[in-house]
Every structure is written in structure tokens, then in C-alpha cells.
Length: 158
Length: 195
Image (cartoon, rainbow over all chains, first blue to last red; front, side, top):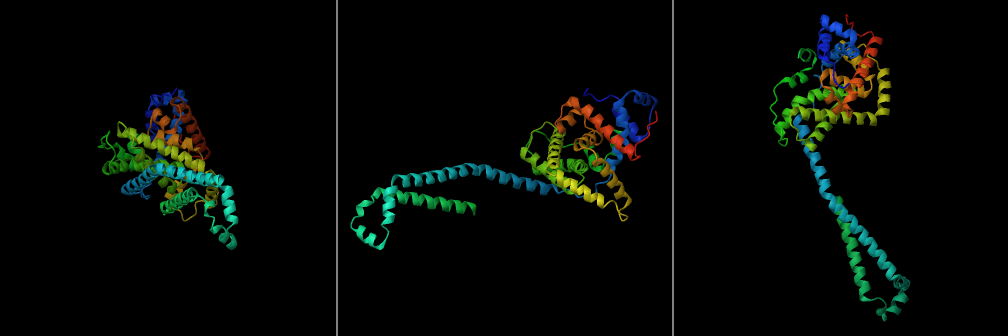
């Protein structure tokens, strides 16, 4: 069923040239596919001949260059994918770190914040033992990571 | 073939020239330029007849070549590369139709409002009328008819380009021809085949 009728090329040529032989006319009587082909072939021929010459095609060197640029940005996007993933993981680690830190020492932090009044600061000046070194060290590490991540995000976007 | 010489535009006639492109090597700029010069005219005509819009045809032509260069298919012959390109262009054109369905209806209505005016040259009027007739067909019918009659593609090539089974091409092509035949009859443009 998929095969072209063996007369079709000749039918198309005959239809285009309006030059029919008896054999082709005989065939047309019995082949619906060729009748349909012959009915549209001259019109399709005229349609194909309508000149497109006034249209200037894009220059091949421009197409080549654009394709290279697109390829370059696609490659850059692909190369940047692991970095994006690392950045996402870093965001999650920092956010998780802050959440764990706040949960771990929430009572201490809350009490410390409540004491942030002039009188409270004076009163607690003598008792610096309420916040351990590890607390400040962890706070410093988390704050540094947050700042670094923020700087990286800003610079990467720029 | 006589029909080729008689009916095809100049860009297609260039196809008949011997091809110097060597397969199996990655495409460099010089090879691409040769391939482009041999195929772009025919592909643009196909896309223009499919879409009826020169800007869209330009856009789809470039996209097709971008994809071609990105995929850099290592195909046996230039004929295979050309088939690959037509298949890609057909897919892009079909996507274009899906994306611009509503927009196109609006444009068609506007075009009807600005029917061929007196200032339009006879050649332009003919082109306009033919494009309008062809636009009445479904995109797939347009592709089938153009590939079969202008590109002289065989059923296998058409089935590849349209993503349909090779077995279906004969029936689909028959229907498309019947439909165009009916349109031409309604418009009084059908040829008289002397039997």
C-alpha cells in the first residue's frame, strides 16, 4: 500500500507538460491515485515556480556564527550545572546549620537577647560564662558561610 | 528529470549539481556554507509555503540549521543530511502551528480585511491567491504535497519528515491531493485531463 504507483512519475510529468500518451490516458481510467495526482500536479508546479528570489536568505556565515554562540551558551549552561547544584547544596547546609544552631541554644539566645538592655549588659558583664566559646565559634562560622554564599550569589549573577 | 527542470525554482535546480561535501567528518564552516547554499533555498520555500509567513520561514530556517549544527549528525550522504534537515524543519513548523494557532486566526482575519488591493501587481496577486488556496489545507497536507510534488520525495522520505508510518503516506497523500483538487475545482482552477 505504501508503494507509489509505478506510473505516477510519468503521470506527473505528463500533467506538468500537458502531454498525454494513450497508455497514460488508459492508466488514468483505472488508477484513482494517479487521477488525484494529475489533478493537482500542474497547479503545484506553478505554485513551486512562484519566485522567492526577492527574499534574501540569511547569510550562511551569520547562521554559522549564531549557531556557535548558541552552542557556546548551551555548553556554558551545561558546565555550570554542577556549580548550580553545589550552590543549592550550600544554601541548604547553611539554612540547616542556622536552624540547628537556633534550636540547640534557643533558650540561651532568648535569655541573651532579653538581657540586651543597658542595665542588663552591665549586670551580665561580670558573668561572661553564660555564652561559651563554642557558641561564638559556631556563630562566627555560620555567619561567615552565609556572607560568603551571599557574595558568591551576587558575583555569579553579575 | 523533465519535471524537475520545468517546475522547480532555481534554488532547487542547484540540488541537481554534483555534491562535494564529504560525509563522516564534523561540519566546518566551509562545508556548512556549501551545504547551506545548496539546501537553504529549497528549505525556505518549503517553510514559506507551509507557514505563509516570510518572517516565520526565516526564523524556522535558522532554527533548523542551528539544530542541524548542534546535533552534527554523522550521516552517510548529503541526501541523508538534507532529509534530516527537512524532518527537523517539519517538526519545528508543526510546533510553530501549535504555538501560533490563535495568532494565526487573527492574522487570517486581518488578511481577509486587506484583500488584494488595486495597487498589488498581477504577479503578487497570483502569489497571494495561490498562497491563500494552499493555506486552506491542513499543515500536514501542505507538507505532504510540497514534499511529493516539489521535492519529489519518495514515501519513505515523506514518512520520515512527517513522523508517520510509511504505509500511511500513500493514503494521506491521496487525501491531500483530493482535498487540493476539490479546492481547485471550487475555484475553477482544476486542469482538464483528457481521457
